[in-house]
Amino acid sequence: MYFDENTVLFLDGKWLKAAETKTSLYNQTLHYGNGVFEGIRSYETEHGPAIFKAKEHYERLLFSAKTMYIDLPYSVAELIQLSYELLQKNNLQNAYIRPLVYLGETMHLNPSEEVHVLLTAWEWDNYLGHQQIKLMTSPYQRPNPKAFHVEAKVTGHYANSILASTHAKRQGYDEALLLDMNGHVAEGPGANFFYEKEGVLYTCPCGSILPGITRATMFELCEQFEIPLKERYFTPEEVRGADAAFFVGTAAEVAGIYSLDDVPFTLEWEDSLGYQLYKAYQREVLEVEPVYIF
Ligand code: PMP
Image (cartoon, rainbow, N blue to C red; front, top):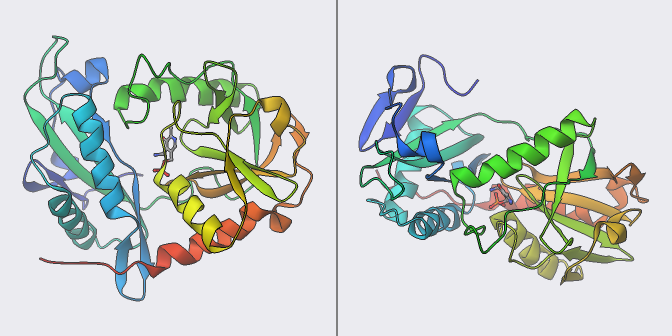
């Protein structure tokens, strides 16, 4: 699904066939989760494939690397250009781009100085599907922000996301909603959370979440469309039975939620502010002008 015999990827300055690429089984990222990554989308526009918020994503990659004491040998501008080349080489338009920074061999607990940069891409439909989803409040909290740089996209953090998501699915739900250490709603395993009550949207402040680039886009769109949006802490009790709710993220885009802990939201998705934002986001991603400098 992610690659076939024709897929070309970028690894450490070279363009290689994905099917023929190897990595060490002794690398630090595999053993201890010390690596950083991004999830980026490109969209087919009238000017060719355009990467949405490319600069923001690569700035975050560099930021994430810095939090883990990893020095990246590429600039934001270089990574953007390489990403466009990657799309071109694989003949991709609507694609998901996955940059991964992984480290070399060491079993010690300081970062290996061998830094590998991988860029790969594939076609990926909305990862939460197109149906409204059933959520459950997870018994797994988001990591303590004093234990991790939770605002960075570090591979090891995703063990927490996998745990919460797998647990929710085994209970018969589509996805989990994770709380922070104080019992306030934080976010989903791979997306930020918003809910609507009496014409106002709410989302939690930064602190225990990955501050998403799509979340920031929602703030911009709310301002543009004069949709009231408040950042504040709230509990799952306040969310259950509210008017509507949705997840936002690069992979999820804007995904409507049907219920939380079996209590449905009262509005039809199509009548909600989230749906307006979903439509606006679909337009916004097509307005990007691609910048190629080969
Ligand atoms: N939270 C988590 C834990 C995520 O993994 C993601 C996906 N990167 C998001 C939020 C949404 O972030 P973005 O909008 O930047 O994709």
